[in-house]
Length: 272
Length: 272
Image (cartoon, rainbow over all chains, first blue to last red; front, side, top):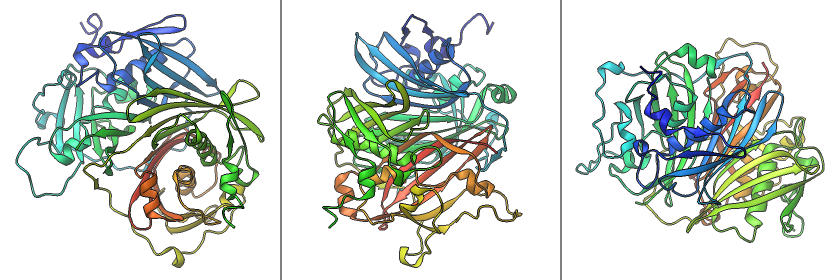
C-alpha cells in the first residue's frame, strides 16, 4: 500500500520539527559521490519549509548553495522567515552539522499565485513516448538508482573512444522516480538537480564535479500539479560555457502533456 | 578626469564599511518605479562584498531576493561570511532599513578560478555594430537614463495598436553606461537586471511589475574582464512562461569580441 509504505524519496527528505532547529538526516539511498545527492538535500529543505506552520503559498523560487559536503548522518535545519508580504514570503535556511559549521545555505520565495494573463512561450521539446524509450543502464551511484532515466537525445557515452564531434552538453530525457511517485514540488526540486553534470556530456567522461549553486523556479502551483497528475517529467538540459573550472547548466522540466513545470539553472565546479 | 569625478554608478553603489554593519544609500539617479533599480541594489551588495577585508576571489554566483521596496535614503548591509573553503566563499547578505525590517536578501559565492579545459558552447548572437544601432529613446524612469540601450532585435513598442503577431519576449541589445564606464563585475551585476520586464515586451504595454528573485553567474573573472577592456555588452534576453502572476527571464551578457561574460535568470511578479 503506497499510503502505508513511505516512498524512499519521502523517507530521504523527511524532517522533524523543532522549536527553532529542525532535524533531518542523510539517506544512503540517495547518496552521491562525496555526500548526499544535492537534489535530495534541496528537497529536504523545501520539505521543512512546506511543513513549517508559518508557511503560506507554494514554492516559487528556490536557490541552494552547497557550501561543503554533508557528512553521513543527522543535520540541523535553521528555517527563518525573513519577510512576509501580503502574497509572498522570503525564507533563509541554513543546514549545519556538528554545531555551527554551515554545509548548505538556501533562500526560498513562496507565493500565493493568482489568475493572470498566461502565455507559455517556450516550445515543448517533444519526445518518444516514455514506454518506447530505453531506460538508461543503472550506474554505480545510489541516487541514480532511485530514478528511471530514459534518454530521448544526448544519452551520455562515457569513457568510450574519442569522437570527432564537437562537445555537446545538450540532453533530453524522461525522468521518473524508479518507484513511481506523483510529481509534486518536492520531487520537481530534486529532479531539477537530477541531470548529469553537463561536463560529463561535453567531455564524454566522468571528471571531479560538484554543484556550487542551484536555482529553480516553479511555474506550476499545487493545483496545477494536481491537474497534471503525473509520475514523470520530460527534462531538457544544456550548458553555455565551461571556463576556468566552472560550468553552467540550464534546464526545463515539462509535464507529459506539455506544460512547463519548472526551469532551473546551476553553476558547478569541475576538474578537467 | 575620470579618476577624480566618480561615475554616477560608482556613487550609486557606494558602501561605507562598519564593524558588523555596513551602510549604503539609494541614489535618485538610479531610481525606478517604487524603489531603486534592482540592479543598482544588487551591485551595491556586491560592492560591499568586494570591498570586504575577508573577501577572496571573484564573484561566481549571486542571487538576490527583493523582499520589499527599498525606501529612499540610507540602509544597512549585514555581510556575513557563512563558509570559506580553500578556493571559494559563501556569503549571506541582508539589507535592512529602520532597524530590523529586511528589504533585500542575497547570497553570493566567490571563487578563485583556476585554468581548466574551456569551451564556450553557446553561440555569440551577433549584432549590428554599436555605432550603427539607434539608441532607444529616453524613457521616464531615472535609472533608464543612466544606460545607453541600443536594440538590435525586439525593441519594445509599448502602448501602440494591438498587433496580430503572437507575443514574443525575446530581445537583443547593446547595453552601455550612458557615461561610458569600463565593464567590471559590478556593472555586469547591474546590467544583468537592466533588461526591460519581459512582460512589457510580450504584452506590448507597461503593467505593474517587480523582480522577485534574480540570479547571475559570472563566467569571466577580473583578469578576463581586464582583457576584454570594454564599456559595453551585447545583451540577449527571453522568457519561457508567464503564468498566475509570475514570469521568468533568462539572459546573456556578451563582450563585443564574443565572450560570454555572464548569464542571468530572474522571476518577476506582474499584473495583467
